[in-house]
Amino acid sequence: MITNISDITIFSDLPEDALLRIVPLLKERQFKKNHVLMFENDLSEEVYLIRSGMVKVYRISDDREIVLSIATAGDIFGEAEALSNDIHRISSVEALENVSAWQLGKQDFLHIVEQYPSVLRKAYTILIERIRVLNRLIRYLSFYDVRTKTANLIMDLYFNFGKQSDNGYKIDLKINQSLLANMLGVTRESISKTLNDFQTEGILNIQEKYFYILDKSKLESICNKSEEVQELRKWNNQ
Image (tube, rainbow, N blue to C red; front, side):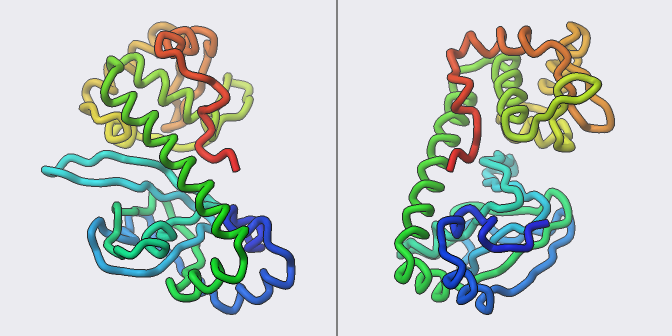
């Protein structure tokens, strides 16, 4: 769990005296798994700083859900609306597991931005990174077949949550098939078939919702058809 707000990306360039002034403005919040912290189009102004846990950012249309991103400890959300003239929520946010966060009021956040230009620069950097990730998502949704888009998403997850293990390259994130399907805009049945194919081909192993990449070269060869730049798979490059 993050205990120092300097570990929150948007505040990472602030001097110690500035951080000490911000701490009293923060309100500690705890959210259970599956709790929806904000709903798309709602009028609300809070900014959230994740201390531990993970949330999904998503939109729903005609009862279909598309997951836009996953946010983890050190990330911020709600700041885009705070910096905008329109405070309607851009998307919904739901806890994928128990989440601990700091809550910050809009006016307090704007006051911090006015006092410390580095926070605004970080906010712009975060926004650009999100646009880049969304551009990749649009590319997945629009141009790739299920096999290629699934391989690319697994590689994205590896670059963001992967680590070496005795059983191969582990993606240290519990993933269910519904989440993958909603990140790619396909049916759960399509994802299930593709994952079964990957396991049969010796590319992937799944244990207790953890993915282990057994043949990284083969997985990359599927991704290479899409001409992705491997170094750009990181969702946060600040």
